[in-house]
Length: 116
Image 1 (tube, helix red, strand yellow):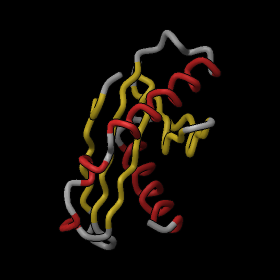
Image 2: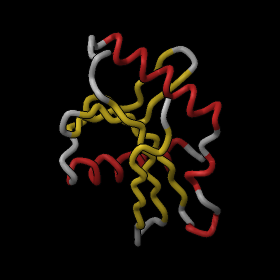
Image 3: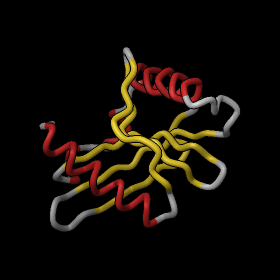
Image 4: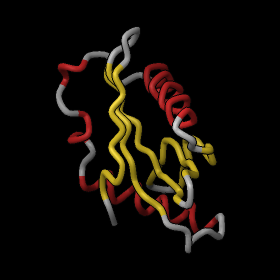
């Protein structure tokens, strides 16, 4: 996927999450070996969000395209973030937000998509 398409998907998801009461803490957080698309605070939880964007819904289940190895990288990167922010004690979760389409968008928010 091109960077422009990825940026579009993340912009859509940012607006969606904010409309659901999430406060954005970081976007495109990178540490050696990993990246987290969006980090938010939602209630007591710090939420690490993986964004999956497809222009067409018939391209398969995008949530299934998050491999075990990718999940491990996200978890390890989240640990670095929590340590860096001195929030290692905070409850957290890992969500996937799927976005399908372009003009007619469909959003599928999967809370607790994976765990450590």
